[in-house]
Amino acid sequence: MSLQEDIKQVMGSLLAVAQITLKQQGALTPFAVALTTQGEVLHLAGEDAAEPVVAIERLTATCAHEAAAGAYRAAAVAYDVRIEHPQTGEERDAIAVNFDHRENASVIYCLPYRIKGGDVELEQPLTQQGERRVFAKTGEPGTRN
Image (cartoon, rainbow, N blue to C red; front, top):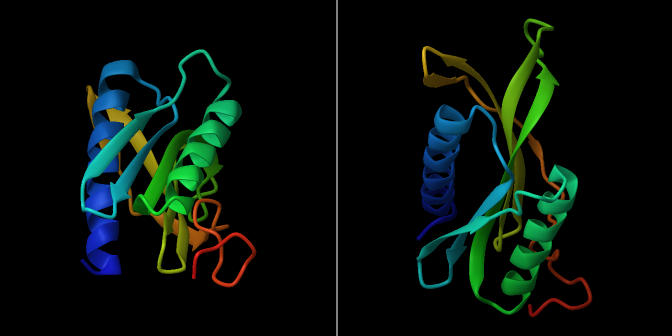
């Protein structure tokens, strides 16, 4: 599969789970979606009792460990945030997604949303360069390149 196909597969699965969770609970507990080297999509739950920052760090560390072992080709950690919308200046709820791929791709997606009448309405994602927290950069110590 190509990088674009992997992004589509991971993000599609992740956003489906996020929308169901938001619809049922009105909030999003951090969770992750990983794509194995065999093409299997895995869902990793965050710890409900953990503070969101702790849950995000634990999910990221778990994904990084599996990526270093060669088990994952892509991973994304999702969590709920509040942002100031760049076009309106309005403070909004958003789904933040830290997406990393073994082909040196790392993007942070931020998808503003509203819950209206029990439905989750997602807006166009805002993006920025990610920090490559799951897959070590090529040539760094500890990589298998």
